[in-house]
Amino acid sequence: EAQVTQNPRYLITVTGKKLTVTCSQNMNHEYMSWYRQDPGLGLRQIYYSMNVEVTDKGDVPEGYKVSRKEKRNFPLILESPSPNQTSLYFCASSLHRVGKNTEAFFGQGTRLTVV
Amino acid sequence: DAKTTQPTSMDCAEGRAANLPCNHSTISGNEYVYWYRQIHSQGPQYIIHGLKNNETNEMASLIITEDRKSSTLILPHATLRDTAVYYCIVREANDMRFGAGTRLTVKP
Image (tube, rainbow over all chains, first blue to last red; front, side, top):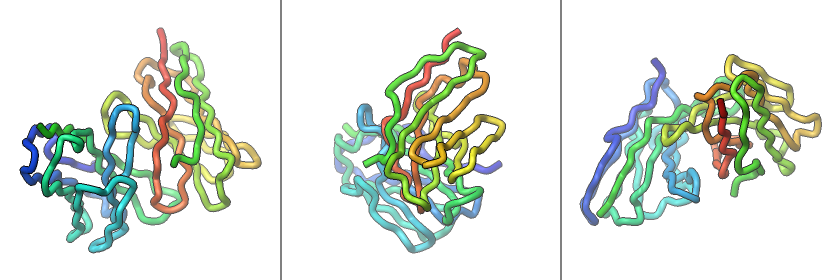
């Protein structure tokens, strides 16, 4: 079954404690991205990756890092989380080119609370 | 900024067709129109996309005007499970930006 898997689904952490949210896809997609969703602000893109070792900033990259060492994995790293990073996070993947069969698949979401 | 304009909310009676409009007057020739929906706080779900021809799949139909400045997503027989936020996105490459979407409520 084609899917994007995020872990953990829920996480409560303290300010400053480094954490990683993992994202894995089994569709051999080239393109992967991270979004955060906040009430009243909708879905905003944090980082995206066009392929292995190719990453770029989205609209709200501050405070986040990503890596793309393998095609299937795209972890989101918060080196020093702060309360304003409390949010619902989604990972997504799709084929690189736009056209047929380029729908994006989203993970189930990770609800992060930073206290 | 999102390149689309959608109504904030709409209601639809169960079993009737839901027609969700989207304006994208600045769309360029290479940009596709995509529709996604998000039920509660689940991950957005792909519905359909098109370039200039109308499209239909098992979930919905997409009608794109000839000038491509607007489109309509049609759910032919809405059910209570179709209650969700529906996002219309124009996209050329991998630049997928979500606007506020339309909150569709299907009522019994």
